[in-house]
Length: 491
Image 1: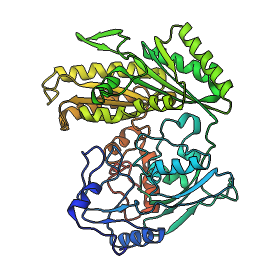
Image 2: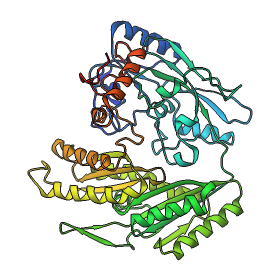
Image 3: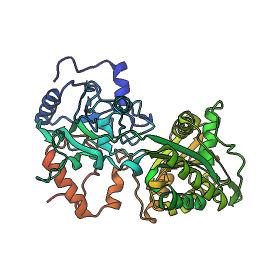
């Protein structure tokens, strides 16, 4: 199998067997690092014939255990496949790259040609484009530029049998093609369960001529939603690129973890208090809004007019507009520190859900009630920690909430507490007709919930698709789909 790619050094294997959370650990003794599609094909063909499980792995930045083994599967790392082959069209609007290319390196390459990569994540310095595609990663500019389903023009994939499929990977000469089934969409978000993405052809829009941003503070989530509505319908509309919200709890964690960080506003100056079961919860919210356009003067006028409007209507308590690109980056630095800040303060129970924006307020309130009850009831919660912190942020413009529950000063996962939180999250999301996975995927963590959110007939169709591409079930076993029940098993 790909000479010189296998490795049995326990020290070097460690990073491939542990995911970003540190919780999911595999026991793989073999890692293969192919350098070409042909090598991937030989590896998968070899494993298929011998029914050896294979786990495709990109930057290993996932949060649901999708990129590490469950048993002793072979880890197929794409890290050696990192070439950018060409810019197809003369205007640089199409980028073609190996699946192992780091997202940030692709962004830098595109920027040199006057373009941007339409996905942007906090993990961009480590995650790989193949992993982004396989998890259908969203990111902060999802609203403006769309999903990877919309921006991936084509893929090259290798099936478990070793067959190489060109799924519109060469769209340089033509962008429109209505011949046959568009199979690429099965591999976007398929989490490596149908095959290995080896090359990606991606649409890259032009870099915006003008960028603007503001940071404002609201006293309630209902005010945040009203600001969002005005931004995307009446005022910013065609130039609105991102609309991020952060609550006070997570910003306090950022300030505690990074005491030298400078905030645009004093996040302690808004203190509306809510009392639940004699516990006081203080919930101001901060919003980061970014615009992308083609005329600096026009876009600045629109942003200033919008700022005046929301101030006059009393929807924001305070705010500041960025005066230059450096200040815009400073705003984003705070937003990007939310994730590492929670991890620095204790064990984090991480949730990535999708809801209507108007449901964020009631969801967060009800989850905090559940957490207070869990902390106060020693018979329900194995942990004696009564100070669980529920820090929330996300892309409210597309309904994506990152709910992070931190157990301060404890870096060990509490299984009993996890069950309570998991069930609470699931119930609160389902009664609002939301999704338990907005962009992080299912992996080995959330796959069992599929039996509760998909009908048996839908699951049967998914098992049938899996069986067509992966008849021996070697690709990323134990992930994405639950173990089939009698009701949902294929005929």
